[in-house]
Image 1 (cartoon, chains in turn blue, red):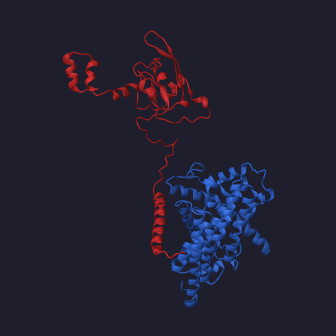
Image 2 (cartoon, chains in turn red, brown):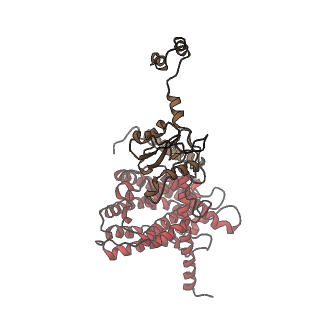
Image 3 (cartoon, chains in turn purple, red):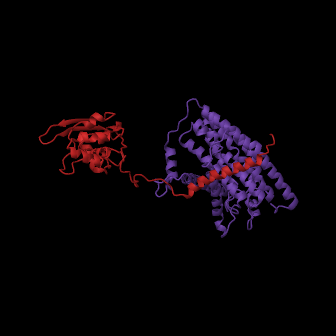
Length: 329
Length: 190
């Protein structure tokens, strides 16, 4: 038998590579989906039909690009920022179980770990904006901090509703709790409301339209990563998509029953993937349907609407669970 | 925050707006893409398409149709056409004919004035090139282009026929009765 550390190393390596491959191809999925939402075809010629080699081509292109460091940049911070940004974004996959017993570590505080680590990305983001020594990058980083801190609270409160319902912070326990016909959290009233709040907070946490003031193309060019090029840009992009996919997986796990679904047990990871992609596509759908909103509107939605609503929801859930027991919903 | 009596009405409006926005994009999603994959698929161009210019051959004799009259050179607004005439026994030819396509504004005036239907427009807009000099067209290149692509409907004589004032039958009959010239017969119509 292998020593445990070696075993963890191997599973970690596999999960990391699967995640990176998945993230690469999710960009293609998003581009095709966005194209269809606009009555276009999307990537087509690289890897006919339908551009299935496009992500590889993109990756190769980014690897061959010149790596530029601005002369006035804070080199140390500037070079470290992509890694500081990528690590938390990939680390969130550590606690995600893809099927019973299939995952790196099914911590008994999995949800807490996920929420804590996923909000760490802001450090790398601000390092990038600060280290670039660029007005736009700094402005964008400050907006990002502003926005992510505002939306972390509703995000956490919405994610806590299933936790309260299941009575556990362990991800596999939350999935086990949702077993049975219409047992998923999204089918109960409280769960549905929490899911909607979760989706809105997800949009903001991932800096997607309509909450994308930090990379508002018309004013800030590309936001905090405006000075990055080549592989560093690729790392930031990878981190952003990994964060997005990780959050989609979390949403599928908390509200859509994770790997539960008809069919034999080995179909579980596929169901999970399908549900996560569904969440991702809904988020993308919203992204391509709305326009950007102002800074004050973003903050107003968070502090005046979403935060009290999710707080109330959490209290209501706690009350219901306390009175009727966990199965009430 | 002041208690707004229309809070729920406003919220309902907002939700409906969100639904409508999502609905628009979803309708696009289930619809077929409108993209035309250009180099492989070409949509049907209209008959009066104004594309790249070319020189045509006379359909009856097979000779070059251009007689070097320089009318196109005189009318060209951006002055991209240069013609030299070659005097011959039966008819004249163009000795040189250069067209700077990179400055052409595709106004079709040269086609309209051409007395022999020599200069025509083609149903193609494919003039992308890596070298600007490739768009400086000489006589041979213009003739070759004319054979390469489908010509547009418009030629000088067709356009003039189309734009000629209509001749009412009555006036013509009266003019014939008087056995007057054509110029007189046209006057009452103007």
